[in-house]
Length: 259
Image (cartoon, rainbow, N blue to C red; front, top):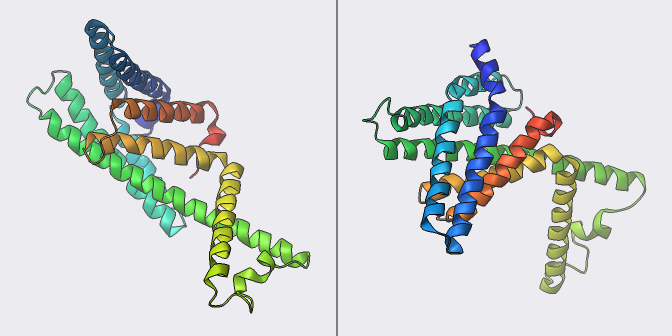
């Protein structure tokens, strides 16, 4: 098991390069279609995209074992929310890769009787559940970091003898029942929360990259399952962006969100 997981990890870079090329072909095909390129050229791009997709499925053979090993490690995390989100995400990834392996067998001719449409729908459902868990984990980590940043800021203000928002958070004597005073106060609080969110994400690049990557990937299963039709152009662009970010985390391991 450990030897296979090690081999699978070595093939990740090749798979992600193929993924970037596949979605680049999808984006290019959409652009060629919009600009009235020749049908023969569009057909060649679609064929290249199909070959890259089949090659990725071959490179992902056995990734279910890697996902299961990751789920076993996540079970021991001390934080309950992280343990739940990460474990469920890895389990859904394992099921997604298993369905993907069945699809590869069908497309390669090893199992010609496989209902490819049905298995594709199943794989994208598991992929969507995995991404939802990833984004839930990102939201939880952002919330924790924002609370830590807010607490540290409050302590600094108390240490310097200042007051948070000049006492507006406690609702001064002139503010109760005043709609005209509450709306600007609400806008100020919202602006401060947005600034705090921007500061947290700017100070934690791995979390920022993970949010962008998962958000981009989310459009792919939504489109394939028919839940939100984005079109091949948006799917190709989002897939290309997320693939580039994934390659970046391989080149710079410190940009990978842990655990």
